[in-house]
Amino acid sequence: MVSLAAFFPFKSAQAALENMNAISEGVVHADLKLFLETNLPLTGKKKAVLGVSDSKIGAALQEEFSLSIQTGGVVNEVTRGIRIHFHSLVKGLTALAASKAQLGLGHSYSRAKVKFNVNRADNMIIQSIALLDQLDKDINTFSMRVREWYGYHFPELIKIVSENSMYCRLAQLIGNRKELSEESLESLEEVVMDGAKAQAILEASRSSMGMDISPIDLINIERFSNRVVSLAAYRLELQEYLRSKMSQVAPNLAALIGDVVGARLISHAGSLTNLAKYPASTVQILGAEKALFRALKTRGNTPKYGLIFHSTFIGRAAAKNKGRISRYLANKCTIASRIDCFSEIPTSVFGDKLRDQVEERLSFYESGEVPRKNVDVMKEAVKEATDVAAEIKRKLEKKEKKRKKREKKLLELESNGGTNDDKEVENGEADATVVKKKKRAAEEMEIQAEEPVNNENGAETPAKKKKKRKSEAVEAVETETIADNGSEVIETPSKKKKKKVNVESVDTEPAEEIPLTPGTEKKKKKKNC
Image (cartoon, rainbow, N blue to C red; front, side, top):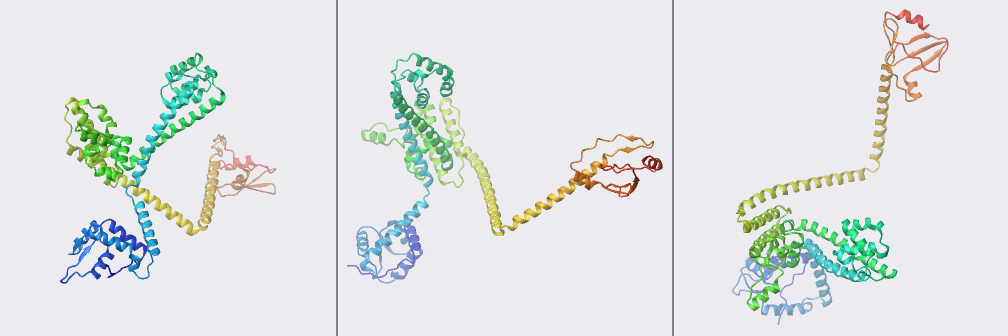
């Protein structure tokens, strides 16, 4: 029935993947265009009919070529037959080789789809909110089990403490109620955060109607309570993680309606992109599908809200305004989700402005105060968002520059090896030597300034107290003494003249210099002699 006219194999696995991606997006690849131009009779008496199994690529080919395109019907049967008998149509191709090639291409295509999935950030939010709901159910169930189990021993505690996680922590802390005393009052106050409640627990433990409990039963209750407490702590961490992910993926939706409700909307829609595609009327009743179809079937009233009922706005509105505010809120949620989905730099500016608008509309329903126009609010939001986006971009560029600079330095150090370290050591030694010389010169100047000065009458005027010299080595550098034939030569750094003074004996300590004035030179010489 069918004979092979032309066959064009792919040059490589990469080329095959590119062609497959182009077909999935409904784009005519260059290889496909070349193959059709080469083998199809575009001109002539008989006009060729091109059968295409995919309608999207068929529409694209019809725009590209002036051909009559046929999709569906007999074309699907022909392509199915070609797929089954393809190895017999092409020479040198076996069924095993064809199936291996198909499998390899399928894996490559799936891997690329997962890698470049635009909704991959949404998946974390969807899983987190599902786990959060499951944890809420589990913690409630386990807490009820702890209440029943520990209630046999201390039934009065249930009436005093109603909160689940606090009850489990108290069961873990108290243990045997008979061992509870005044000393444990402080630890009870830390858990319940209330002195009156702690005192009530202590008093109830003394007059409790509960049965006695064995140590092994008590150990099991404490272990189970510990598990419930750890689950409650993990739930808080997970909620914080969800908040951080929502601020990254959908900051405007989170600012408008809250992290948990926004995450539930994304989870119910399947992804943020799907939620952005929904109209406001669908977002309004998202999560109330059963009620909607039941109302359509029985011709009753359709639901006014779905998941957005958990928002604080609908709870604050009056009964007659709940439907109106839910419609308005769904409209704003749709705008916020579209901004989050298609904006390059995510900011929460639009979400804050939309939240203010919902608040104004709520006050308008209650008091009649006219809200601002949407155009004015959006102009303000666009201006603020531009400034914030520019600031974020500037910070990111600055961080990128620092990173590149750090990488460049590391590369230079790696290329130079140990030579830089040697240079740094040499420079360090040179700097240390210069510092030492400067320090020594400063000390010499201080010593010179502190020496006593004689006035005209020959009396010594008291100078500042001498500072103790740091070491004998410094003294040796500052003042050099030479003893020869009962005379001593003194050299000072300020005056480089050598003065010979006769002394009877040479002291161990260096002699102090006495500056001479022209008027009293002879007298001083006589005195010194």
